[in-house]
Image 1 (cartoon, rainbow, N blue to C red):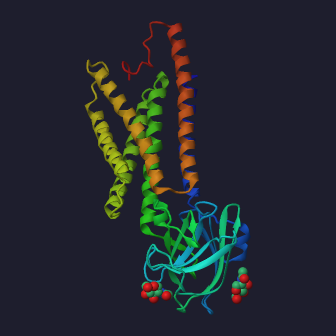
Image 2: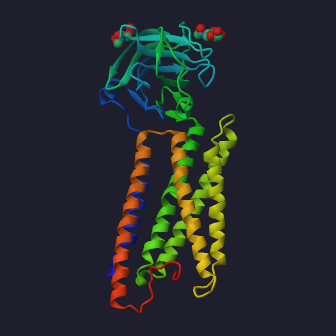
Image 3: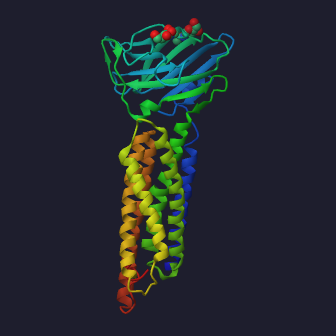
Length: 385
Ligand SMILES: *[C@@H]1O[C@H](CO)[C@@H](O)[C@H](O)[C@H]1NC(C)=O
Ligand SMILES: *[C@@H]1O[C@H](CO)[C@@H](O)[C@H](O)[C@H]1NC(C)=O
């Protein structure tokens, strides 16, 4: 029975891990917002921030661009903006179309040549043939047909934004969350594909590496060690499985940590102090933990008890800090909501598995004790492991 149980555990852990990898790779594939709009335009881009989409049809002969930009404004009375920046990559210099409701509650689209945070309606770099906006389920849809002044200029820098309020017909400043600051891409109108800013890609890689290593593999390794070793038949398999989990978590984690340091050195002016300090602390603690493995006293050695206490305390400390830092990272990166929900779901699943195993092992240990009271208690981790 114990062999079956422990192999079932290994199998379910494997299934869990592979489904994680599969779902992570699937969610990389882009899917576009509204099917109706997708049918009306030849291209659709799932913009990487602020839940925005861009549908468009480009006519290279007339150099005209018909587009539908959709995004949920920060509040129902807020605004959404879509812009081309012909001179740079950020907000300053953006030639913008901004949609919001006027004082009568009717949608209006205005154009702004953005030179500072103070907006003044003006002409823009491109010619606006028509521009309208509407609302659908809390999402503002901005439709426009524009003519680009330079024929053959198909590589464009796009910027988009959402805001919470409009005062006297002028959109108020947007929030300064990381997703508000990151909402820009370079696009080739003919290819239709957006090339996300390399920093954005690096941030996503950093997020995935760290969430998988510190946030998932590491807790799985702890579950393996804590529960599998109750079963004599899983000895020494649990030990190797535990070491394999934690060493691979450490290797992936160090890679993720490295990308974090690089991102930190590249982002001038923006410092995420807590996230960085917890990250550095985690790296140090985990390194010490791995090194301590080589100093592990033999099973019957007098000091083994102390080593075990130390190892467990350190392990749980790393576990708590890892989870906190994954959430801090999710807050900083502010990706689509589904990522946070996915991670909470995974933690919930791991937590439930741990509770279930805790119950099973307690029952097993209890039975073992009552059937043969002289048998040493294999679950008493501080003494036997
Ligand atoms: C936008 O404003 C800047 C600064 O005032 C000016 O140099 C530029 O020519 C303007 N662009 C357009 C298209 O009007
Ligand atoms: C916008 O203008 C273009 C060209 O003038 C026209 O074909 C199109 O139907 C117009 N779209 C809307 C929504 O009015």
